[in-house]
Length: 165
Image 1 (cartoon, rainbow, N blue to C red):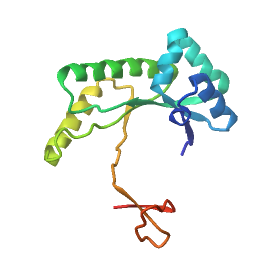
Image 2: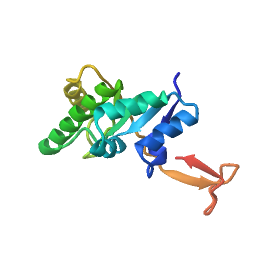
Image 3: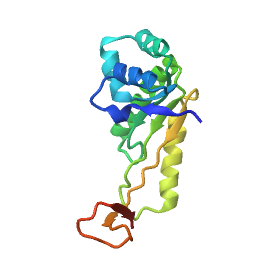
């Protein structure tokens, strides 16, 4: 297992800071936040980006992320494909093998499971055109949380423990 620092934990900071903090904390890898890469590349080249990671001895483990990849109208899906192509190009240039994609909220909660699976298979096959990358699919679970006391009993204002319903 390779433990990595995640750039989302330092959102207001720059990519340069993330790389420095990753190295200083003893992590060998960084999950790179895509928006930080965009800001960095506005003033730097891909060679500069490669050098940034190499100088710190930090592996760019993943690029995070392309959100809500499925159930999109054609024009929005075209933007997803373009972003995938762009992040794939950057990832390949810096030696990063994974671009993370995040599922979409369902357009209709009564949608059949087979239809949901079919949509994600279609999208992941389509995005799989960029064969040199592994796409990490992050599944986000949405649960209702209810505060409760240490014994598991509901309490109006308790923040001691959170119980998933």
